[in-house]
Length: 87
Ligand SMILES: [Zn+2]
Image 1 (cartoon, rainbow, N blue to C red):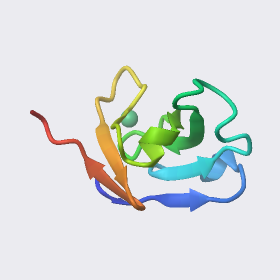
Image 2: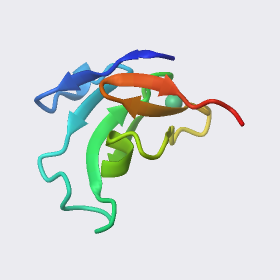
Image 3: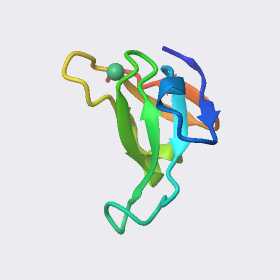
């Protein structure tokens, strides 16, 4: 579950393959004022789509897959997916 993030410039759901990110058109305007939603990311492990926040895009906090059957946790570093090391 590592590799490059694939950036989609247009919202084409069929092209949201695992590890694809799409920056919201209203990035920063929805969600918490402190850490607003920024993009949609397709889980690199299972492909479940989820909203991620500005801090997650910046790699400050880990992304945790929202699927109940997937426990993927990872950071976005530059345009790389870096698995979160278990403590
Ligand atoms: Zn997942």
